[in-house]
Length: 517
Image (cartoon, rainbow, N blue to C red):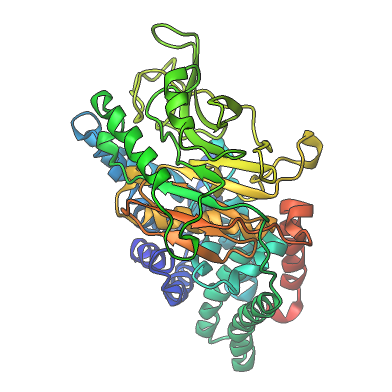
C-alpha cells in the first residue's frame, strides 16, 4: 500500500501537476504510521530496531521507494544512449538510487512515530521532518534536491510567489502539512469540530498563499534591460549523435545557421545583440581552437557576445590533466573574454565517486572525469548586466544560485542556465528541471534565461513567469528582451534559507498547544 501511495503522489509533480493526488497519498502514509507498533527495547540492536527500523520506518521507506521510482524513472533514459555499454546498470541506478533516497522518508516516518502519538501533533511533526530531510537530501553526498514537494505548484505563478520569502522548502512545508491534514478526519477519538478545523485551516493557509501571490503579481513590474535583444539557440541534437567526431562540422553549422536566421514576428528585421548556445554546444575544445573561434565570431554581433557551453581542458596531448564542463563568453574579435567552470558535477555522469576503488565508466564521453570549478561567480558580458551562470542541474539547488555577498563578486542582474537534457528524451525529466530552475528566479528576484539543447528553453522574469519558451524536441530560436531584475530584492535573497528554521520554530511552538493532544 505504501509503495502505491508514494507512486500516486508523483502525479502532483511536473508535468502532470495533479496536486489533489497528494491528499490521499500523505494522509494514507500518516494512517500507516499511526498503525505502526511500538516495540520493547533490550540491547542496542533492539533499540535501533525500535527507534529507527520499526514498522513506521518500513511504511515511509516503501512510500519513498514508490515516490522516487515514479519520479526519477527518466534517469534510465540516459543509460539507453549507449545501451550496449550501460543498459545493464538501469535496475541498479533506478532501484538502488530510489532505495537510498527512500531512507530519508523512512526516517521521517520513524521519527514522527517516536516523537508523538496519533493526532494532529504527529501531522505537524511529520511535515516539519519531511522538510528537514528534503534539505538534508539537497546537501548530503553532494546533494540531489530534485522533486521537492514545493515544485508541484509551478503551474501557478501566484502560488510560487511565497518562495521569494521562504524559498521552495517553505512552500514544501505548507504543502505537506495541508496534504497530511486530511488524516485528521480519521481521528474519531478527537472532537469533530477540532478534526474539521485541523483539516481546513492548512488548506486555508494555501489559499492565503495563493491570494498573496496573486496580489503581488497585480503590481508586478514589466521592465527590460535597454538595448538588449537575446537570441537563444536550441539546436535539438540527439544525444547519440552529439559526440560523434564525424558530425562535429554538421553540429557547428547547425548552430551557426540558427544564430544567423532572420528574426520573425515582433523582431523581424532586427538582429540580436547577444547569442546564447546550450551546454557543451561545441562538441570539441573551443579554448585554444583559433580556427573555430574565427568561424563562430562571424555570427557574433558587433559590441555583443556569444555565450556557449564547451568542454575545457588543461594538460594538452593525450589524456588531459584536468577537464571541465564550461561556459565561454566569445567576443566578435574571436577571443574568449570570460569562462565559468561547472562546480556541481553529476555523480557517475561527469565523474565517478571513489574513482580509486570503482572502475566504472562515466556516462559522458571520454575516460577522464570532469573536475569541479571554483564555485558560483558573477561574470561580465559586454552590453549585459553581470550574470550568474548555472550549468545543467546546478539550477536545482535552492539558495545556491548567486555568489554570496562576501565572495567579492557583484550581485548578478540575471541567471543563465545552459543545459543538455537530451539525455532524458521526452520524459518528465526536462519538465521537472525547468520547474526547479524557475523557482530560483522567484527566490532571487532575478530573471532566468534557460538555453537547452533539445528543450525546454525559456525566458523567465523575476516573478517566475515564463515569457517565452520552446518545447521539447524543437529546432528553433527564441528572440527576446532580457527582463530586468526586480527593483526590490526578495527576502529570500537577503537571508537565504535562514527563513526555514524560523518557520520550523513557529510550527514547533504551535505543535506544543495542549488542544492538539
